Image (spheres, rainbow, N blue to C red):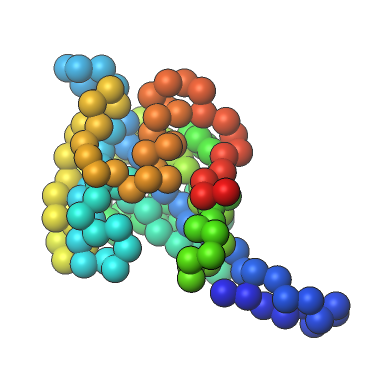
Length: 160
């Protein structure tokens, strides 16, 4: 999507912001992350992804969006969010919007994570960071590898 700057008349692309939450815990086989298997969303269906993620709405900060999405998608609240990375994402000449994705890790929350939107989520499960399921949403896999390896930069890029 593009917009025209009313001052200069130049066409610029619009950036779509999204927030992602990776719930993590200590498990029998090291650190585990909660992932959902996407279905019926029209984007990356059949792939494992963050248990909670979605667009940042007007008037909402990225952490507020992350907390809202966690409540809406997996029924948890009072998350203690740790900023993980901001990712600038593109798909070159494919007809998608330019993206800025805000990734958060939560190690503390209230409630037992569950599938709240069964039409969009085929499964929900804990996976060791050292043995992630396949297939994963590619840009999320990049972030998970950085979390696992401890070398995730505050600003990352995907698709360039």
